[in-house]
Amino acid sequence: MRVIHDIHGGIHPPERKALSQPGTLQSLALPPLLVLPLRQHLGVPARPVVAVGDAVLGGQMLAEANGVMSVPIHAPTSGTVRAIESRPIAHASGLEDICIELETDGQDQWVVLEGMLDWRDREPTMLAEQIRSAGIAGMGGAGFPTAVKLTPGPQRPIELLLINGTECEPYITADDTLMQCYADQLIEGAMILAHILGADSTLIGIEDNKPEAIACVQAAVVKANASIEIASFPTKYPSGGEKQVIEILTGVQVPSGGIPADIGIVCLNPGTAVAAREAIVEGKPLTHRIVTLTGEALSQPCNTLACLGTPIDHLLQEAGWAAEVRQRVIHGGPMMGFAVSNLDAPVTKITNCVLAPTQSELPLPAEPKPCIRCGHCAEACPASLLPQQLYWYARAKDQEQLTTHRLFDCIECGACAYVCPSHIPLVQYYRAAKGQIRDSEQERKRSDNSRERFEARESRLAEEAAAREAKRAARKAAAQQQATSGGVDPVQAAIERAKAKKAQQGSPV
Ligand code: SF4
Ligand code: SF4
Image (tube, rainbow, N blue to C red; front, side):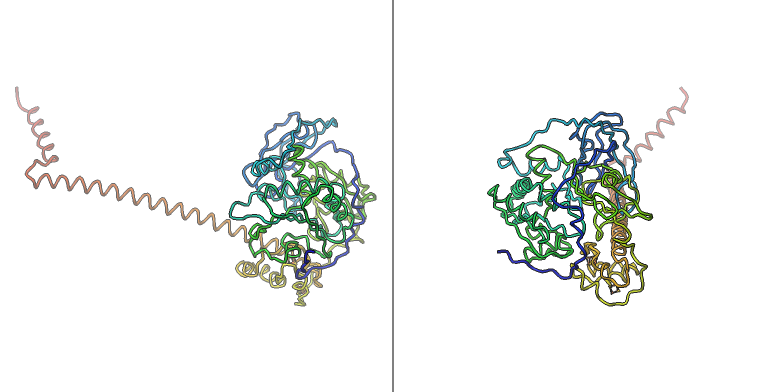
C-alpha cells in the first residue's frame, strides 16, 4: 500500500463538479468555421503549410512544427482554408494571434491514417517523434510539447511515469470524464509512454472525489493485465500541481527551479496519454479534446469532445447559454482560469473548461483593501512561499527579493488570494512580476550579446592593426638588414633608376 503524504497549505473551495455530469460525453453540432491558432502550446508557433483557398481533409497537417519547442497543427475535419491572419484567442492578455481559419464542409473526410500496433518493437526515439508529429502538447493546461518531456536525455534516467489524474480545480471534470470514457485507451497510452521513457514503473494518481474514474481505470488495468499502480488520495486544492502531486505520492520534493525529470519522474496528464495512444496505435493526430462546459448560466452543462478551433461562443450556445448582464465567461476553472474577452476565441489544445457562472454563483471580486498582515496566505500556500512578502516586493518591483523569495516556485494556484480577507488579487501581482523579471532578463541577455559583439569587433580590429604593424616592421627590418650587409637598399636603388631614366629622356640625341 502506497504511503500518501500531505503537502503544506491547500484549501477546500466548493467543488461544484457534479454540475457538468462527469462520465458522459455530449455530442454537439460541428461549427461552420474553425479557428486554429498557430500557437496552442508552450513554445514557438507552428509554421503554415497550406494557403488560403486550399481544400483540406481531416487529419491533414495545416502547420508544421517550427523547431524542438513547437508542435504541428492538423485539420480537425475536412473543409477549405479561408484565412491565415490575426484572430482573437483565449489568452489572459486579450491579444490576438495568427490563426488558420477553416470553413468546414460537413463531410468529415479524412486522410488515410496508419498506426503502429507493434509499438512494443519500435524504437522509443521514433515513437517520441511520432508523438511530436501528431501535434501533442500537454493537455493539463500548460501545453508543454510532449515529445520534449519524453526525451529528458541520458543524464536524467526516468524511474517513474506518473499520470496525474488529480483534476483538483472546482467545476472541471474533463479528465474525470476521459478516465471514465477512455480508460482502456488511457492504460495503453500509459504503457506506450512508459516504453518510450524506459520508466521502471507507472503510477496513476486520482483524487478520492472521483470514485467512478478510479473504478474504471482499475478495471482497465486488470483487463490489460498491465503493471500499473493506481493511487487515490484525499481531495484538496491544489493537489494537482505537478510538484504537489509528486510530493503527495512519493514524499519527494522537486528541487526549487528544477523539473521532475531531475528526480527521475515524468508527470503527464491522462488526456496526453490517450492522445499519445491515438497517435501511435491509430496514427491519428491531436484534433479534438474533451472540454467541460459548465456554470449555472448554461441550461445543459456537460462534457463534450470538441474540435480544436471551435469558437467558445458556439459551445456556449450549444450548451444552452442564457447570458446575464455583465456575464463573465472563464477559460479554465474559477481558481486558475481567466476571463475571455472575446467569445469568438477558439478552443485549443489546453482548453479543459469553459465556465459561464451567474453572478450569484460566482460573484465578481470585491474591492481590494490594505493587507492586514494576517498570514492566512502563507498558511494556504502549497509551495510554502510567503505570499504577503511576495506581494510587497512585487509592488516595490524589487526583483532581487522576489527571486530570493522563490517567486518562480509560485504555481499561480490562487489559494492565497482565495483566503485573503482583504481580497487582494495576489496572483495578478505575481504574474506581472514574473513578466517583468523575464523582460529584464531578456534585456540583460540582449545587452550582454551586444557587449560581446562590440568586444569581439574591437579585438578583431586590434588584431588586424597588430598584424599590419608586424608586417611593416618586418619589411623595415629586412631593408635595414640588407643595407648593413653591404647590399643595395632597394628603395634607394629604385630612386636611382628613376633618376637615370629621367636624365636619359632629357639628353639630346
Ligand atoms: S492574506 Fe491578504 S491580508 Fe492576510 S497577510 Fe496575506 S495578503 Fe495580507
Ligand atoms: S498563487 Fe503562488 S503564492 Fe499564492 S498560494 Fe499559490 S503558489 Fe502560493
